[in-house]
Amino acid sequence: MASRKLVAASSAPILMSVLAAGESYGYAIISRVRAVSGGELQWTEGMLYPVLHRLEQQGLVEATWRTAETGRQRRYYRLTSAGKKALAEERAAWDRVHDTLQALTPEVSRA
Amino acid sequence: MRDHEAMLAAFAAQLARRGLGEHQIAELLDHLHCSIEQRIDAGDSPVVATRAAIAAVGDVADVTREYQKEGLMHPLQKLLGIAFVFLVFVVALNLQGAHMTVLVSEVAVIPLLMITGVTLGGLVASFGVQRTARMFSVSVLGRRASLDEAPLLLQVCLRGQRLAWTGCVLMVTTSAMHICSVLDNPAMIGPAIAWTLIGVVYAALIADLGFGSAERWITLQAA
Image (cartoon, rainbow over all chains, first blue to last red; front, side, top):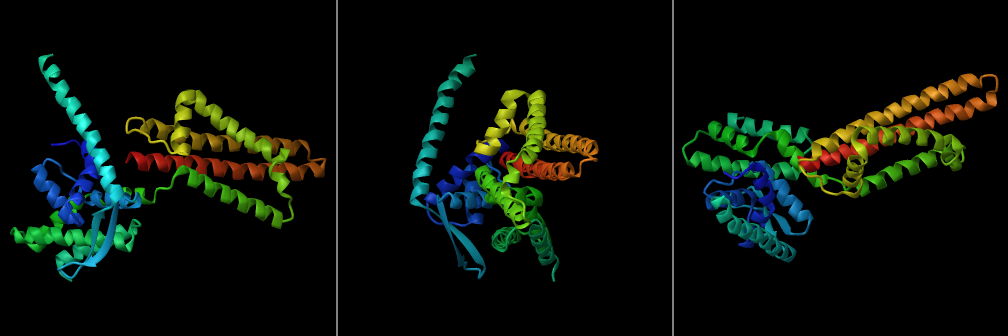
């Protein structure tokens, strides 16, 4: 299970990655992350929305209220072009961390 | 109203009491409805499903704290607010017939120097130059505080608040002694009282708008 700090640090790039596949809303985003991570990434669900709102304030996602098929009002989020660029940069940074860890792991195992 | 609807209404009321807006609550309620529907489909009763869905959203205090970061103001904007308060103060003085130069006169500068001197001196004596400077760089320039250093920076803020008021008490005491020494000269009493009053205003600005704002900024950043 990922630590709370790691979950917090990875929340923005993960949210943007889900939205890169297309428009979505909060509950669907959480369900998608839970399914893909096999339950390894456990978010406190209420924490997701402030992160989405901050991404919106930064211009990385945009949101619209629409009526869902249930008849309830629902807020849908979509990645902006600035968001796509930011996601590419985040992915590159995470890849570098991953590659470094991978490269160092054999040394740690031998030690 | 059915039990699970009453639970949702109570949850929404808790969020509203903690300052969440109508749209923020509506979004969380839509989330809860989705979660409840899925749990009911999986076989839970409405009440059990609602209880579990609310628990999954998280502690109300934690969630609202996370939302408060949305409205988090950059310290430079906060300084703009302080400048505005100062401007209102100047205008009020002018309307009362006092000239604004009173704020840069010896009467006003001495208490300011006393309070800032006690505060900064006390902080440096307690935490050292580096940690004091770090607190200012985080809270004034908006640098990001790491989770590890946040508790220490908060201590610096709280000590700064207390020291500002300590400086105020020293300044008021000094001023009172000065007033006592000039009782036979009424022309000297007015400026001495003005010194005291302006000093209290400076202490309030430094302690609450200054260190209080810095404390809130660091707390919310680190939360």
